[in-house]
Image 1 (cartoon, rainbow, N blue to C red):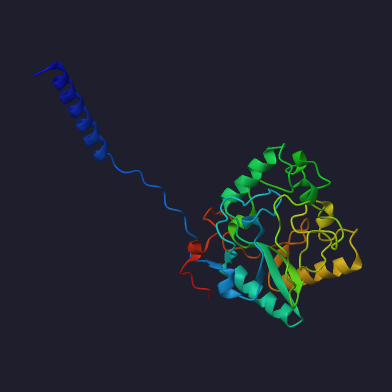
Image 2 (cartoon, rainbow, N blue to C red):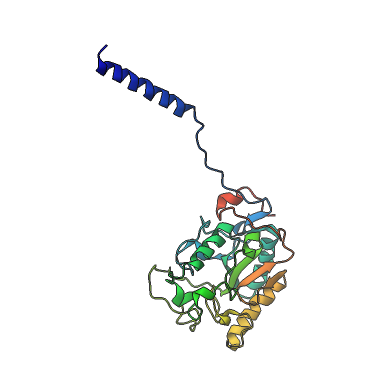
Length: 271
């Protein structure tokens, strides 16, 4: 046998041995996505008339991009919270109004995304609209952001009131000129909400529910939202006029991380 033929035989044998070893190795499998407990439901299956404008699936939020974990624009809540919102919606419909939700259940991975964004002090692309009067380095110290969120427990919702018939709102255009969330409603980014004094997710003391600087009309609108939700079991966070938590919470000590997607609650009965 020539030296060349011998070398070829050696290389062929080595390749065959490597192939055999590779084939025998177990295939790597991605960990399955967590699903929601049976106590979680899609709000649309419980209260289909509530308007949904899920901001964190879009670029129009304080981060400036879709947030981790928000796969689809669907509001997910614990069943008791969703059923309580249905009651509140029924009361408002009789008066010619509708609820509109901006955010509902929020996975922990989304909160982690907020934390990473807050730690990057060079990223201030959305400052002019969402925190025009607050230094980004103060967002944690001033209580606007935290390492954990009540939203991740599934019974907290961010929402507002819309007068019916609801006006259409134009989509946000990435990179468009921003207007401070504290500006008059006619100047802010268009939202079909009643005038609450600020835009949603406005990191400013003007967002405090009882801020003394808002007008009588804005105070009346906030009071309507707060009283309607309080009557069905929701408590307001005083620092954010849009933030409410249903009490008692079914999961007061658990922060979930399943994605915001229809499949997370597929097959869950609304009632």
